Image 1 (cartoon, rainbow, N blue to C red):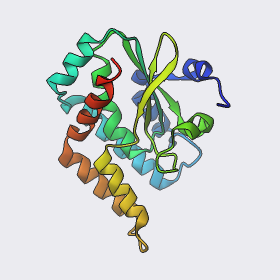
Image 2: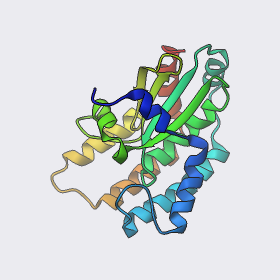
Image 3: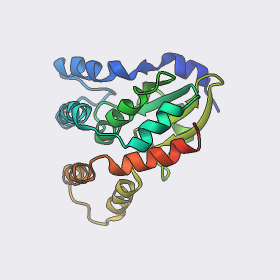
Image 4: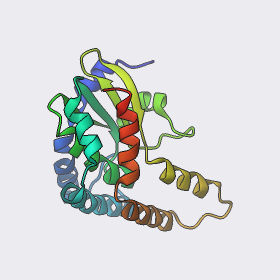
Length: 201
């Protein structure tokens, strides 16, 4: 480990400030990271719409709500993400909706590209896919587990796309992924959260 996790945690921003930051950046025709291309700005604008919709429409499973209610652990959900990331827009609002139900839980974000040393320890299939959610005991600052960058079925779609010799344009694949999320309605995410958190809290 070539980094100080305590310093990473101290540098993280509350998730409540995530969407306002993105909207302020877009007002200046910018997103997070170094790539402010038209495509990345388009992805970011779409993500704002998705996040706002999910904030209003997410209905959490009773089992998840009960698990959060009964938790005695001070848990930090530390997220490596970027504003242009479509998977972050689909998964982070429901997770935050859950976190907000438990006073002992909190959720903070770090920009992945500014913290690649931390990201190196949490690769998926050899890549730096995001969002990556680290589940940390806030009292001991110990990483208890992690989730991400997307539900298992969606991750398999990514693997299949990468394995194609002749790939369709990435924009087409991204659209297909968003259709999968729309059909799934956070059900895969909630199942995986329940499985992951049941062992920790």
